[in-house]
Length: 345
Ligand SMILES: [Zn+2]
Image 1 (tube, rainbow, N blue to C red):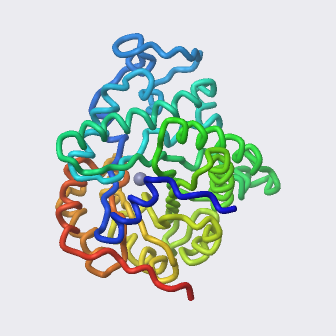
Image 2 (cartoon, helix red, strand yellow):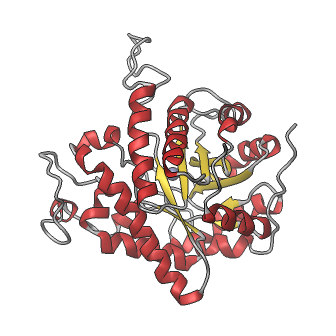
């Protein structure tokens, strides 16, 4: 028996039928501006002391801020909501046992995902109380820092740093936590390895079966080479055919490239995918210092080109984007109709 659709699924379908929906922007740039020190990351200086202990330094463990600096994280989500985002992502890109192993924080993973969804919900409820607009939480699932498809060791091509089963187990824990925290959507993003993504999809389906409702899944790949392929070597068309079985609510691209460089790959995916399309590029390409200096109007103009050409149903921003970028993007695409989903060819 197919699972019944979640209430948010129906609301999202209705909203997407009438307009282009807005996703939020980058978390990293906003966190950087807070200038947090080690003591703030652990909650010992300011904030809330984390009940999970680790001997590793935590500076840079941005996901941990969900537990140690929840007010600051909520404020960032709130600013994106007020800038025009219909869908706001949880700060859980690295909230798996695999990614948290770098910080010795595997024990915090369940709490990170449950609280990660709750803190977005609180921010969105505040914004909605002010203007009446419905908004949705997207539970973010990142690719982890290991790839199941390829060996990281050129002298040992058969070696794998992680297996499908390791990934499935880690993603199941993450998806279960996000659903427990009340996420409306699951967003599998920045996919460079399709096998990692397949483990995430498998885990999400398991988590939804346990939950008893079908939750919309957004799947977003990233292009990592100049010829327009993912790291595991697929073109946008091949990538779509690898994930189509999951019936994702959206498929699309994020990160890696600025909007202009993303456009041809997005157009290719838009032509073949018989589901909604989501695109959230970086604010241009990074400069020599790894920073993004494309301004809000610049990014918005290029994202508006996607909309004008009928390529997109959901748009937002990735690395280097700010609430000002999201406000400009929301304004720039307002007058364009959402892309029509083509019949399956
Ligand atoms: Zn990015």
